[in-house]
Length: 215
Image (cartoon, rainbow, N blue to C red; front, side, top):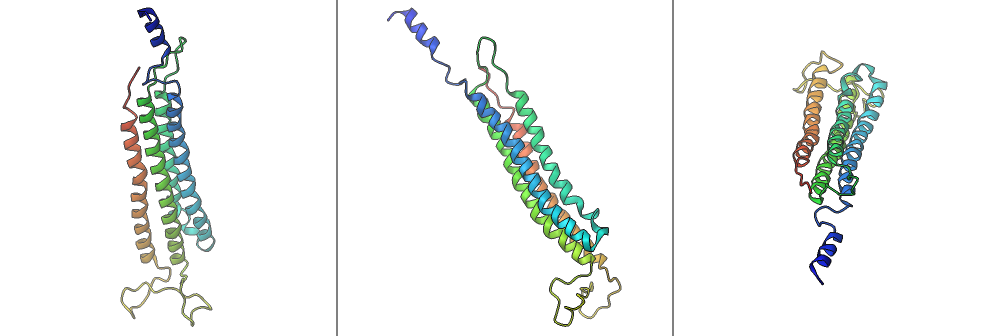
C-alpha cells in the first residue's frame, strides 16, 4: 500500500469530532429548552389558574391581586424561548461541499444548555403552580371570611376566623385584611424564589451555550 492509497483511505474516514449526526444533538437541546420550559409554564398556569377561578367565585375582588402566580408561570416560557433562539442561531448549516463545521463538542454544549434551562423551568413551573394553588385559595378563603375547619357550632354559617393575635381580642375587620396581607406577602416571597430556579437555569444555559469548537 503506497502513500496515495493511505491518503485515499484517510479521506474516506470522517473526522471524529465533527460527525454528520452532531446537528441532531444540537437541535435536541433546542427542543429541550423550548418544550420543557413551556411544559413548566403550562403546569404552573394550570395549577394556579384553576384555584384563581375557583376563588373568584366567592371573592371576585381578589382575582386581579392573586393573578401574580399565573403571570410568573407564563414568564418561564420566555426563558426557554430565549435559549432556544440562541441555540438555533448557533447551529451552522452544512456547506455545499457537504463539509460539517458543527462539532460534537458544540452539540453537547448546546444539549446541556437546553436541558439546564428546560429542566429548571419545568421544576420552577411546578413549584409556582403548587405554591400558587395553595396561596390563592388561602387568600381567597380569608377574604371571604370562611373557616376551613369550622367548629360544630359554626358549621351552619361558616363564621369568620378572628384576626386577633391574642385570644379574646376584639375583631374590627371582618374581612381579615391584615391576615390577607400576611398570607399574600408570604405567598409572594415563595413565588419569587420559585421563579429564581428558572433564572438560575437560564444563566447557566447562556454561559454553556458559548462553548464552541469549530471544525
